[in-house]
Amino acid sequence: MPNLLTLISNPAMPTLNDDIVSVYASRLEGVTAISWLSEGVAVDIFFDGDLAEAKASLSSDLLAENFDFGFQQAATRMKKLLVADMDSTIIQCECIDELADFAGLKAEIAAMTEAAMQGHLDFEQALRDRVALLGGMDAAVLERVYTERVKLMPGAETLIKTMNANEANTVLVSGGFTFFTSRVAEVTGFQVNRANTLEIKDGKLTGHVLPPIVDSTTKVNSLIEFRDKAELSNSDVMTVGDGANDIPMIREAGLGIAYHAKPAAANAADIALRHADLTALLYLQGYGDGEFVTA
Image (cartoon, rainbow, N blue to C red; front, side):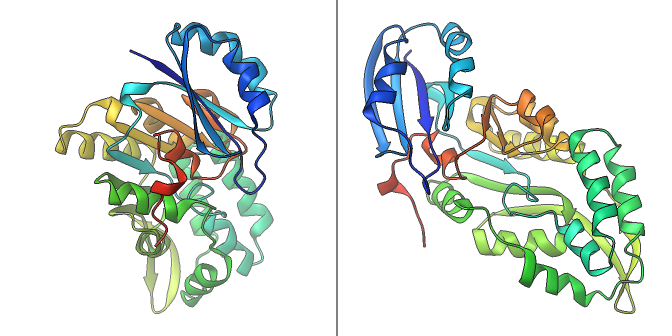
């Protein structure tokens, strides 16, 4: 069964060329083919050598490059289920931090968010503590945050629409809030979205989250639910996230991806993306530019 090394750079700043590809191909045993998925952006190097040995031998050098890489078995690269985090993964911000900005509490709440994402605070307690600080906020601020602050990560819409068009299931599961996941899912095309619900009374946030809490357990259980419902194998499943609460689902998936992630999540992942945008998840599955769905 052939193995595969995929090199991927940021499409906004392509850095790959034939010389770079040749350097790494020369260090792989039994190279059988080299195939560009996007000129200067993404390339597959197929080889028959031992996958684990190749990864151990080349990873340290590849980590020093200004492009990303992923080792896989070629036969199982296409995925039928994607489970994704939202904040700082599918969108460019942490919604709770942006809400806090309108209350003059961004520095305090953002520090708590960062500690939770690093795995230094219990996620559920940190969520409750942060939401409590927002008690009394006008609920209309939620719409302002979505309109003014929430921006999709580059490649997010293309990723989801392309996977949907190829009959994969796309699931958004966030420790954030349903107000935002529902809107992000509608714009991008996620077929399912799950998140926490902020309690609102008389047009204001009460400072409470309605049960049940969506946390790392919910994320991995959602993966298992949709995997088993569709009778998929683990090799059919891809996850992507950036924080400590994504680690269980990253580890459970056949291909767990850390996207511009905190160290703990990056260390838990099969592939850690540091340079590329979210179209990297398509290149890793073998999609070329001509197969991307953008509308």
